[in-house]
Image 1 (cartoon, helix red, strand yellow):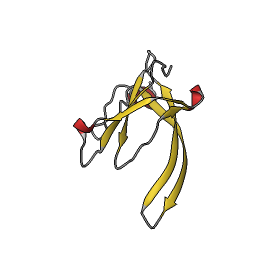
Image 2 (cartoon, helix red, strand yellow; image 1 turned 90 degrees about the horizontal axis):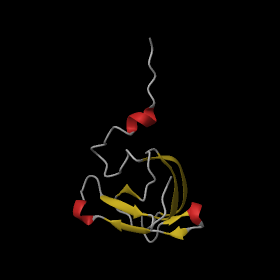
Image 3 (cartoon, helix red, strand yellow; image 1 turned 30 degrees about the horizontal axis):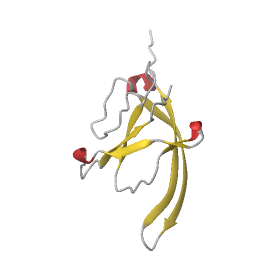
Length: 112
């Protein structure tokens, strides 16, 4: 008898010791990136659009992402007409190796 495992379901019961992200709650299904590269200053400027899928039984009102060396000016939800949402860097958990957790709150809206 063969049993097949579902990698998405396995992720819901696993924590990643090298991440601050709440990987048990969502998966990233796609990322759209639009960056301008400045080789002189060794910087990137632009935006990244994350397509997320909730893998919990309940709607999500907050997610945590990993960040390292980023200057983030805004976070918004494309599915809500680019409505701005709250975000903060949790500097109490900053690590040289892992960076700083980026906590995105959906201001009363949720990812279902």
